[in-house]
Amino acid sequence: LSASEWQKQSIYQILTDRFARTDGSTTAQCAITSYCGGTYKGVINHLDYIQGMGFTAIWISPIVKNLEGDTPYGTAYHGYWAQDIYSLNENFGTEQDLIDLSAALHARGMYLMVDVVTNHMGYNGCGNCVNYSQLKPFDNSGYYHPFCEINYSDDNSVRTCWEGDNKVSLPDLRTEDSGIRDTFAKWIKDLVAKYSIDGMRIDSVKHVEKDFWPGFLQAAGIYGIGEVLDGNPAIYNDWQKYMKGLMNYPLFYWVQQTFSNPSATMDNLVNGINTMKGQADTTALGVFIENHDQKRFPSLTSDMTLAKNAIAFTMLSDGIPILYQGQEQHYAGGDTPNQREALWTSGYNTKSELYQLVTTLNQVRNHTLSARNAEGGYIKYQAWSVYSDQHVIAMRKGDVIGIFSNRGSNANTYQINLASGNSGYAAGEQVVQVLGGDCSVITADGNGGLNVNVGRDPVVLYPASELKGSGLCGN
Ligand code: ABC
Ligand code: CA
Image (cartoon, rainbow, N blue to C red; front, side):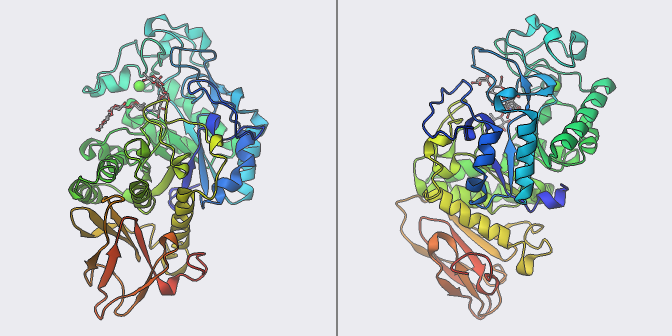
């Protein structure tokens, strides 16, 4: 799938070991550092849950065979400790199971994104005691940089030293060598073909030289969203020259900081958005507020209202929205590995408040692909802040306006004015508040300006004339 096709999708991030089991159990225990039994078959059986929320694609954990057995950090249930890139991790199922998952997705018009790691392999032991013969196909020390621990303030060290530590070391590949580049190019091409993969999440991008990536992406022939874990636009944005699709980490930090704390002001977020808008193609990025590496948002605040605002903000931002499994159930795990809870204990509850909110948000976004935004009007439009005060920000993207507050559940309602010219609406145009079953209609004034009541929850405005067929507010 190409970049412009991916921009229309919304992605649900699955931790394969923790999403669904083949036996469909909702009571199986999950010891947080062990394999818990999630499988591709389990995913196939629960695609309704994901599609019912409006997602059009899934991102699954790395698929290749990992080191086996227990380590001081537990097993390789997350999939980032590769041992053999030519075999699958059998804990998740067989080759046929993965082919079946891909086919099941495609039969629904959905897409498969696979997590891939080219920076390193994994070894259960210290950096200087690796038994390289266990690693396939890179089976001797000549394929690797010498062991050293990363010093994050030194770029060269970030590229050539080893992620991981002396308990589980992650032997760092000489990705600058043409032999290794050729091996990975052929590997990804074959993998994409064999499993009909539509997109990649690419791990540890900043730990590999920038000029590795264009060739790798070209060999894959599909879109990739890379992980450059850096919140500083000055460093982050340069990576977009080598890989258009990246996880939007700068935005992640601003959204987290702003919406988790009612006493934070909107300043950082507003400034951040303006900075990114000028420097990056934000419409090509993946947007998220949670993933398997970060503390979950509800671990920072239990306020449901704030979670709603943070989720609505990210899902209606520029780029491809990515929801991490469990967000829709208001899971609250903190640091690694605690944010990796099994989803099945929620009973896959489709009535939960956030499952419902996410469903509506996906309806909004998916509907912008039809009607007057059909030619990418919404997708290509870089959202901008048409209003902000200390605790409220209104973002316009195409003809959708989202209004988000960090005032929390104690806030009272007040009225804000979206100036004519900013709203983009016509004089006298009717717009509908589509979230939370509100569905009230607001009429723009003679110049297209708008008065909107803002309480605790996010507000999303959609032109009334465009709602037909959206599934929103009875349409
Ligand atoms: C295991 C245990 C942990 C234990 C750790 C030492 O070992 O589970 O409990 O603490 C996989 C597993 C992990 C495992 C690791 C190491 O391997 O999932 O459970 O941890 O064995 C990716 C994946 C991630 C994966 C790997 C490795 C890479 O998403 O799941 O981990 O394949 C760095 C990397 C990034 C990596 C991340 C976990 O670590 O760059 O690729 N993620 C700074 C650095 C970042 C760094 C981050 C780590 O710290 O700049 O590069 O990420 O916390 C902002 C700044 C940022 C700054 C943050 C902290 O602050 O702008 O730059 O990030 O303001
Ligand atoms: Ca490296």
